[in-house]
Image (cartoon, rainbow, N blue to C red; front, side):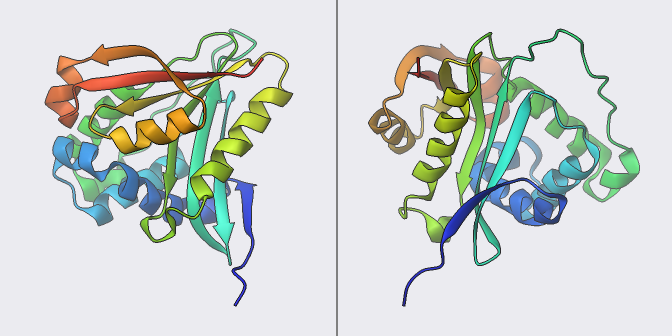
Length: 208
């Protein structure tokens, strides 16, 4: 039986619950260390963030779909060509009250510490996740190819970049196979205390 084709499509509101669950698969180790929230609460947090938190103008999230199911996602961002800042409104507390105010505060702090501000010419991969049941099928490579094609067709972008934790050598090897090179190694006491991850590699793929 032939597998259904995989398509890469822009994020839509109807995918919020599935992508929220995907991010739990990818990052539960970091955020459960920070908050002790269970998988369902973490998924709800990400889903509500998609619903209520304004998307940065210089960013794009894509979803990999097969048979209508979201099996992977990638988020990229770049430095806006204009310095005009979009006003960021914090999401309504009522949307998150099931999670507890302290958990919400800790998650927002954690996300801000993981945030990376791209430089001019940089297309930064903020996250990439493939569903555990669909790994080793080339989906991650498809998402990377989409990001690479996007950056190559934008005249103001010339590198792809990402961070990988030191405790995930398998991911680093995959990125090296895709021609990413370690540009900088960082040690962060704060990230170690919050996420139990002290070593981070900043990797770059030059495109032009």
